[in-house]
Image 1 (cartoon, rainbow, N blue to C red):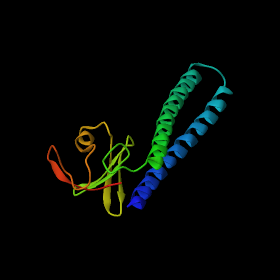
Image 2: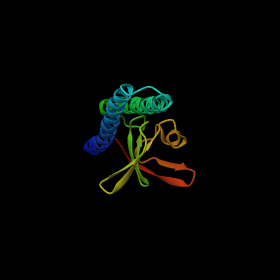
Image 3: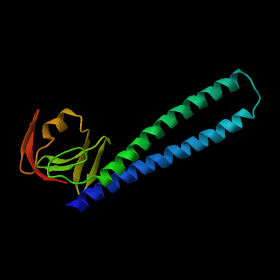
Image 4: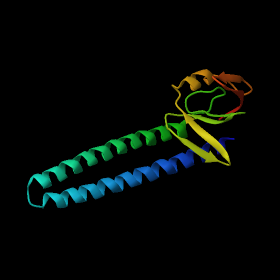
Length: 150
């Protein structure tokens, strides 16, 4: 079972590192473009263009900072010590699907199963926190049984 969790983390890591690479490349391209723009003649048109580039660069940097936080979350997930009960960082397998209690967002598919990343602070997570395998849960219209906690 531990290898399932490791494989899911590896999929998440690949997605995050791909986003990191793309945004880093975009930042470098934008910086190169801005450097070339500064060599151009001055004027209102060029000032507007430089300001738009600066704003785009700020947005890319903000996105990169968010991805760096996701990389830190991945490190937490990799180094987390397994517990018998559901806690932050747990991969929870239920009769209704796979849920990963992490601040990472999104859904992935693993072996034809959808894995939904759920914030540990979410209302659903609060319902299942501290439950153990074989526990029943009910949240809004979703009811099921915990089959494994990894």
